[in-house]
Length: 322
Image (tube, rainbow, N blue to C red; front, side, top):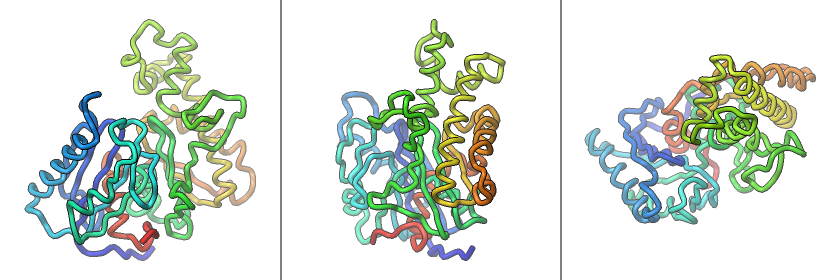
């Protein structure tokens, strides 16, 4: 695949439910410097306080590398958002509702292109540009964490859709009679496979019922599954099933050659990927769907920053809005 990245460095920003991450990323996708801060300090935090913390973090990171000339600012942020306007309302960041993030960054860094997209899209872009999908033109990238999101690359280019949500595999319905989903629907992949949903389902069956919610997270569930806990094992079997069914549907519709799965829940490794792969092969029976490969993301914690930078550095492939 030909690389069209612009020479220069980008101020890259990754905004999640619990953290603000900022980095300086070069044209090869290398994070030259980065730092983090909490996205929220509590209920007293308002939108301006979060913005000031983010802006200060940007300035600190830039100062740490001698304030190099920038070619742009790229951002991956939790949704929902108005795209491409970059007015963001992250579900897990209550202080920002309709916050004009793109406009504020344009004011803070005048004369530079500023591009804001969904954080799951940023992961998909990162893995296609510099990670596990860089040798294919057609790829679905997924994040399985607090929610389940995704991004879609077809013909070597990011597909946005009408509202920037193309590839949002988390809301494929895999069980019409399944549990309620945060989106308002029922039986979505996200309702079954997201981390909090996994833990809640296991607790209903008696797993760690005597512990606090802080001691009964998806990470603890994975630890107990590795130790042989039957309920914990069943929870990951169920999540892998939901992901496998959803991916089979996505592969049939979009004809991708690779599916890359990242996010905190994916760190469970074989506990998740083995039932996922088994279910996918049960449902993907046509020749072209059988050809699809599924594997873990490779860029780890840097993926959000790398993908945000790619919106600028490889914008001919990953940005179509302006």
